[in-house]
Image 1 (cartoon, helix red, strand yellow):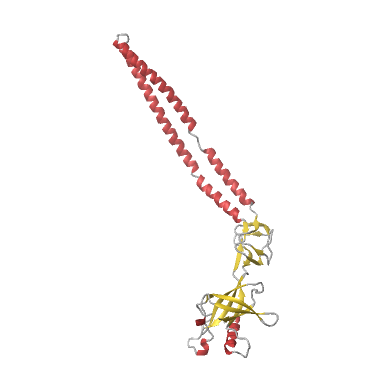
Image 2: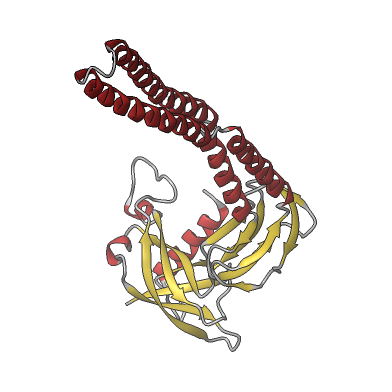
Length: 312
């Protein structure tokens, strides 16, 4: 059995027997607080760290930052790679415009040839032109139509080829963009952001030190509501329940007690130590269960201070 558990058991047994004391409490324990250890999320030199032990911090406040110059350089390098990708892509529009201009010229020639063919047909009827002239115009019209069709097909080929080349080049764009997003997230994490309202309990690092990801920087706890961790016997377990209001007593300098209102927020479902297989009635009294009692702190309650409990 641990030493502190033995002490609590002895205190509880003394309380249950009365011991001749004028003041009898139902349980006793020490005050503790929910603590959060804030760690670095990126590696680098701590450039600023604006906290001291005992400082009261507000949630989401920036209390320092870690050197982000290397991350900024990485971001610039990736953005330069993205810009280079854009320069490698081809613009098909000028080539398509050139081919369309050629098609327009051929279409004009085709329209003229069709006009001449119609005129020649009329002259042939009037015996003013020969059929050879008509045949020559038909051959010219056929060539012009094939040239126009070939140019239209060339536009499709150019668009398909250029699109494939550009897709190959831009396939690298999405991974590079994700890299930029990752670096931007790391840049945000370079700021040391306080996660909760509370008081700095311990400071583990100083400005100028080089830290690594996951290394503890400081420990913080909310002292506005403090928790009394007390121990009760197995026979008392049936007398308590969650959210039950209790009275908490703390020693005062004048020899009396400070009274606080408390609420039971947690009850252990297991004994703190294992009893013997065969239990007598007295041995069952040695079963100790932990309970947590939330108490609003007026500034006098400190971590590690002893407190007593009376169940209402």
